[in-house]
Length: 522
Image 1: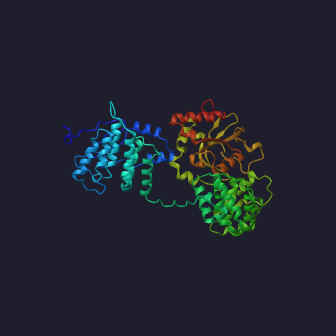
Image 2: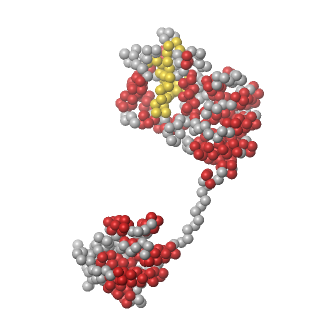
Image 3: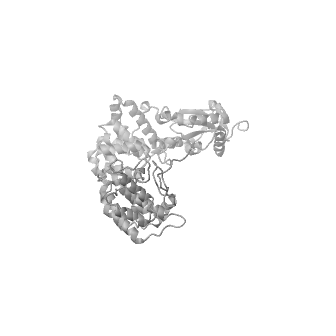
């Protein structure tokens, strides 16, 4: 296919290092090496260089010869003399000739001719083998000509001229570039003032409303965001606004502290909560136990509040309410915490007849994310490694904690069939050392209960290093009751590629505890 011939008497400009030629409908742009060289040699501030690099791309309508004619800024076709002047500029053989065509034809010169002249100047300066001599006076006169006429340029022509002037090496602080930049700023639409963002550090916490702080607390808790600065701001707000806050608001403000396992540095945090509980405990029972649940996860239970919620009057008061079951479940957990973690407590306790299982089934988050859990593949690995009779899955042990996998182990480390053993340790724990041993009813050998704890990604705060308060509480209480815990962190589980690797991983974990199984294990 033959190329279309150009205009009679015209010569196609030779591509040079400083500029890349473009055909009809194609934008012209400098070569990367030329751009880099100019930017490295430019004596300009970083702000100015950033502005130049962000200039819009050159459009083809102003920059090259076209057999279909050239467009004015108004969109119409040029008349013959205007179109002929563009061809003369494109064919100029020296910078002086360029200047002569522009200065001697003032009635024919249009704004788009100046980018054409700058482009041709770049081609001449980079031509091979011998570029024509360029007199400094010629460049100064061309600059002054553009400076005098740039107030009539549209914004696009200004952008193009500025772009080309920089690429041609005109000083960034010289009169040409400065004049074009000034015109460019005049053409830009005024920027609207930036909207004021409700950033927390722009206002003191005591100047914010309870509604805003509750939304912040709920957001942190829901998304497991353990952000110390925000949590400290909430704690300070609670202390400053103590007199204006009721327990229904306070329960929402303290929720992220327990869930995220974060005890604030605010020294008045606990005294403030104790005063609020003393003032509001009899008004809103559910909010009261919600606050105590958060404090239970932080191991900061106030004795005075425990005396109140375990009193017969409080228990009788909540018995006929719609939320009686959930309050009894929380009171059962609080009673467990008193039993295991507060040996010095001498006040009333929850009566046995009022106690209910704390968590009779896997937590809601585990059920919702079951398809992402490692539980099924770990169960299959244990089945192939130990056999189905050697472990129990999802067994709830007194006083109501659900275990992932439970093993019964003899004193010599042999993994025993669970059906021949009592998988539960007594609760409350017996007064034997550490509460970790119970006698096997058949062999009279002490038997240990080993609990494999899956630590999934969602069991941690978003940073992946701190267990959520509820998970830490469960592990802490199981350990205090005498169960030997074997954590399986999600990082280690995710690194296992397939069931064979997982079985090898579980074998190493169990053997590290001194466990034996199979024919040699009995």
